[in-house]
Length: 146
Image 1 (cartoon, rainbow, N blue to C red):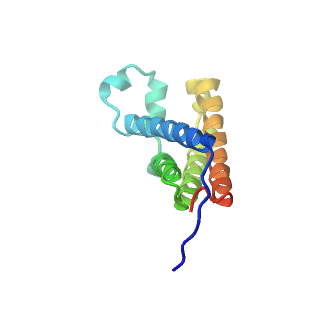
Image 2 (spheres, rainbow, N blue to C red):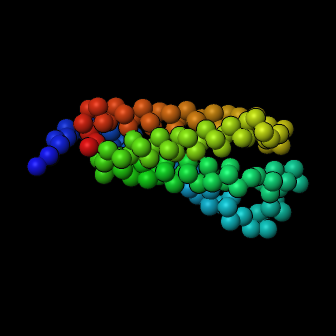
């Protein structure tokens, strides 16, 4: 019988894990809003914004889906103290990098949305995704997840 012991995580582990889940759930809502955007929502956008959204390739939308769904799953895994959370968060990071790489280097998003929406927020998303992978690695090393 191979039973792996786990250490009791500190309170801040739970705080970070819950905040990370809430962050990723906001990403899920953003994805669902984008994937199932209604015409009324498009009517409130500029023609350039609608064009940018409508011309997004399927592989970028898939990367977006991977980023948010694996991110949310990874955070649930952290809360359940499961080792697979690290892999889920790593896959989420890959999705984030692919999606944001497309946005930064293959579109005119900064012209269409402005610096805050097209540069600052995406950089923040990348940084948080990286930090969550490091947090999961630390959690595994400290045996808070197993």
